[in-house]
Image: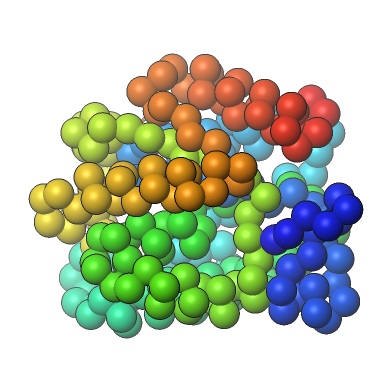
Length: 228
Ligand SMILES: Nc1ncnc2c1ncn2[C@@H]1O[C@H](COP(=O)(O)OP(=O)(O)O)[C@@H](O)[C@H]1O
Ligand SMILES: [Mg+2]
């Protein structure tokens, strides 16, 4: 989304004359870096200061997208890389249309656990599809909607792996990827921050959870004018 005189206009939605007034913040990083923990903590803090907050996640965040999530993360399913990319994008299109845009339209803060950055990291850097193709497919799927801010939680994959194991969830299809995949994913997120530093906040995720939350909130206050 582009900032035009303080009003954000999006590609396809903007063309329909729709001015989006909310704030769209995405949390990215490999599994186990603390995304869900931070989404919940930031949502709590924002709600405490009277903001209307929608917490959502990808893949998922709408009925159709949650159905696609079950399919695409099932370790028993075999999916080729292009199909995987298109399923994530299809889920994202529904998520944007049914959940994110309506919330932003009504002035809410949307906090999403993953978005397009994950497709660049996993399907392009990780699986090896062309970055231009993945970006194009997703630009089309989202109608050109970009987050106002993407928080990237950066952590040594070995530490993230221990956290995932401690959490005790089943390993999903994306986490079951070969050795080196998580390091590649991490490198892609770091490259995405470098390519657009004004739209990202890079946070070292080995810090205490409360420290990370306060860094994110401070950034929202100082750079996005969010009053806490
Ligand atoms: N900053 C942190 N330091 C130590 N452990 C953490 C931190 N943030 C989260 N955790 C723990 O690590 C595990 C993974 O965190 P989670 O938020 O589920 O990560 P993600 O959503 O990125 O997969 C959870 O058990 C969580 O309680
Ligand atoms: Mg999570």
